[in-house]
Length: 366
Image 1 (tube, rainbow, N blue to C red):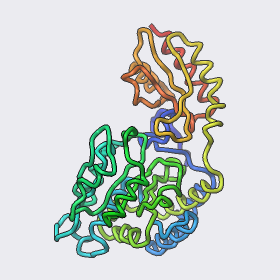
Image 2 (image 1 turned 180 degrees about the horizontal axis):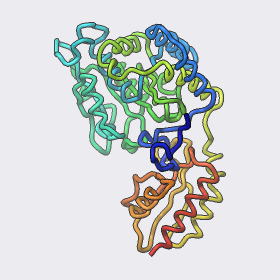
Image 3 (image 1 turned 90 degrees about the vertical axis):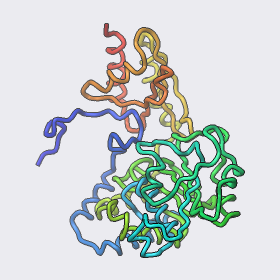
Image 4 (image 1 turned 60 degrees about the horizontal axis):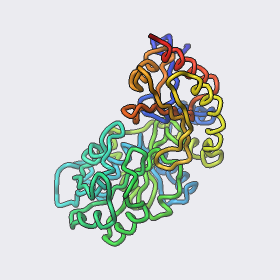
């Protein structure tokens, strides 16, 4: 059987927006596909598969335990449910029936973002009651401490380019607050590339997306202290049943982590070099001005930032890029400022030429 874009009447997509869920996030390697194929062609005791792959990953990542889940969002919901229920089977079966549990999840206000769904939705799905700390433009350790009560189940910290970056306490500072008040700290680091930093800083649970920086199949990973990870694993008998992950993706993701630790990801220096001819080509187009910029959250990721002037707006250019075949998707966060960003991590040289030619056509259209 042949699979093709034409079979399902789909447009080809050039992904210059980054590791985005709306486009299927990332491509997987041959070794990851081989691991998925092995999983798809064999049977396992699924509970044992979860424990043993978790043990294997924990060893690789130098943590007490790990659990593969279906996505980073599932990781947030199940981590919240886990720290509220603390291993109580009644709670697993009745996650929203209050029986004296601590349910408040403290989150810096600037971290309550919509990353495709609001963070607060995942907290609520896990049975948590969100308590925002600080303000939209700042959150200090003192702001966290102001809202911690006897009903606080955990502190949640979102490490992401989506969140407010300025005047925000660090993970290390959040760890210190959590320890002073004897509550666990959950760090959602879904798109982050550093797999050791946050547990080494003292976070109790850290959550990653499987298909973003790690370039695995659709999956998520929860790592950290053994007791907390076991509480997360227990959610497979509760809310986690609706978020279960298949054996093929568990094995594919495990292989992806191993590959990632061996090979790493493309360096910022490499991205900058690859973009030189692309930026030069864009700067030859009337009413476009391109430059290379670093990721706003300080990661070692570099993008082409294009300022649109003249009669066309950035939003009009973005829509025109999407409407063609192949559809070209970009980062739209600064469109209201007339800026379009192009993330080239999943874009090769041929595709960059296609993008440059298409931009020239758009800017020359009447």
